[in-house]
Image 1 (cartoon, one colour):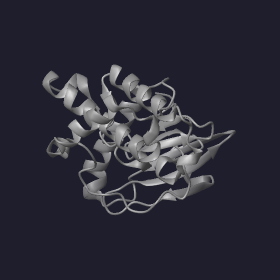
Image 2: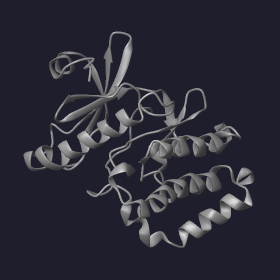
Image 3: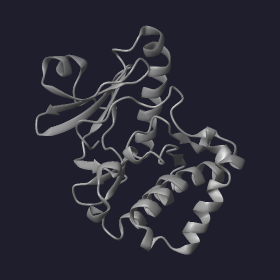
Image 4: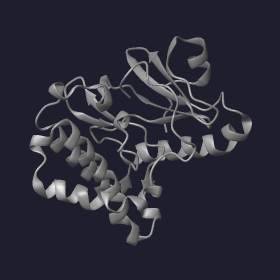
Length: 223
């Protein structure tokens, strides 16, 4: 895995804080290197008990997920490990779905998002936190992209019996936001599927971030 810069480069260069984590969350930075802009997700400022255990596990998991999905449009590009405490990937301009008014979302956005999620699934990856609107980006070209893969799961390492359940967790997030932002284009079949998924919400213990909700809002959108 090629490193585009090092920790020393990061510390001696100019970076912008995107968000600061609480005791169990990473700090996010935007870092310019030449003509390229990167996001750095960094657990190095966490307490040693978190940094050397859970933080390093999440860094490895997110980097492995992004590597598995490498080359797929709508996923952070060119991931690499800065060191055992931080993962880096290319910055993509845009705004989160939470921050984007419905009128600025194209009529085919959610069709594209559904296909993006299905392409991810075909690579045996699930995201598991797409019900969070901050994990979906509306790029500067109006296309969907996915953020924050530290809750993701590689299905090659899970029982086949769970595959449909965890894929449906992802799709429930897509349809949930679709119903809220563009309800006219959500057809009856997808709406019925969402309602059936909502009836089994007790299975949603599989999703999300075990240390709790992340603190703060990103000062800069994108990935």
